[in-house]
Amino acid sequence: MTENGPGTGAAHAAGRDPGGSATHGVIDLLGVLSYALLVAFFRLVEDASLAESLADKAALAEMAVAEFAHFQLLRGKLQELNADPDEAMRPFVAAIDEFHARTAPSDWLESLVKAYVGDGMAVDFGRSLAQLLDPQTGAILLEVLQDPGHAQFAAARLREAIDADPAVAGRLALWARRLIGEALGQAQRVAAQRPDLVALLVGGEVTQLGEIGRMFARLTDAHAQRMAALGLGD
Image 1 (cartoon, rainbow, N blue to C red):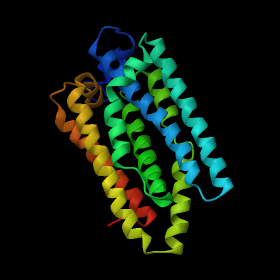
Image 2: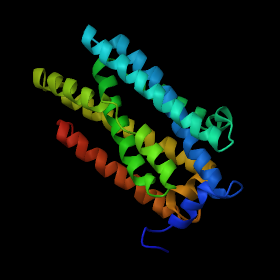
Image 3: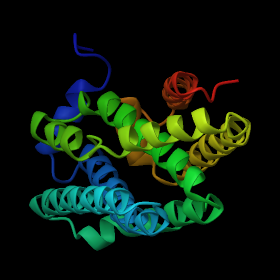
Image 4: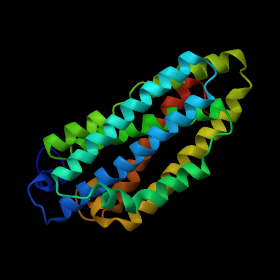
């Protein structure tokens, strides 16, 4: 074990060992993020149709363009690794599609909460993983998971709505808890099916599933802090 923490050597080997499980884990990681970003692009376009002003529609459209550019960056990285982007994404389609099907927002405010929750968790996830990857891949990961402004946009609109009608806060807090529960449920489903990805995430053997639980706990704690800052805490 080095000063950088468990699994750093294995993670750095990801860029040098084309046949190793570390590389398979990186391909899985890039695959799941690629599909998530592709779906995020379409989700932002759909959210734009719910926006109540032309300015908001334009802002969401601009964010959608940024998310598609991030998707293209990851697709290019997969091709550099001699991986087929479609094949890399395919194992994660069902879980991501099911999450979005089970969490379809019923109105504009729920779509904003979903954006705020999802983008915040993505940034936290990226920061926790970047140090486990080779420097180039880690830099790409931080770039594509950088919020294009969606979470800040959503937070501002939500604060305006809650200030105008404090009664909506309770409903939106329940919705946020449902979102985090669904997200963690699908993440656990993926973890059970992709051992190389799990090994990459925990920086060691797949048997270290306790570390996966701790990572999820850290993400949940950060989520709770964001909800509290927005006035949607318990």
